[in-house]
Length: 188
Image (cartoon, rainbow, N blue to C red; front, side):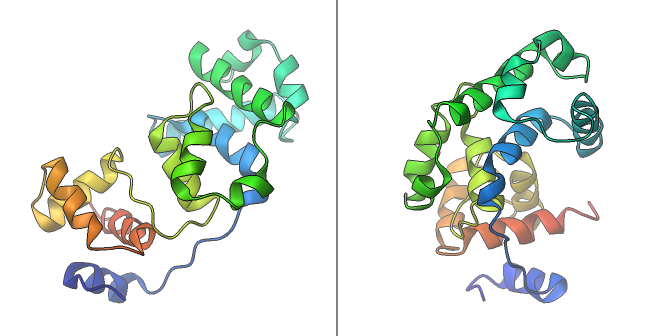
């Protein structure tokens, strides 16, 4: 699958992987991504469950989320800024600023530009959305701490310029390379 012997070894260990097209859930995925930013998986899951509980365990429509008081959102455990950021996402969907059908026609870079127009959505969130929601196969996230740790462990590289050079060799399957690198951290 890869020209890279380290990734081929990981591929043999973990088997093939396919990403699922979750583009119809883009709104929900972006909100969940913001809620989980810079948190451990456990903390993110806890806050996300509390968030859903605010809406009787049903994901709120953009309209409903917009009408929800920030303090109520904060009671789920998110910061003021995260509460505002998820409202920004709701506004973008309500106002038609994000149209899944149109996004799917765009290049990865253009999608990223559209997503980061929403205050609170940065490069990392846009890159994770490209990989895990929109099923884009050739995305690498230099800002992902897990990827940096895996590359340091497996390749002994820490310099960002050298990391980017290495990632270039994984084209056109960088998303798959990321997935295998993340898997390598499971026993870390």
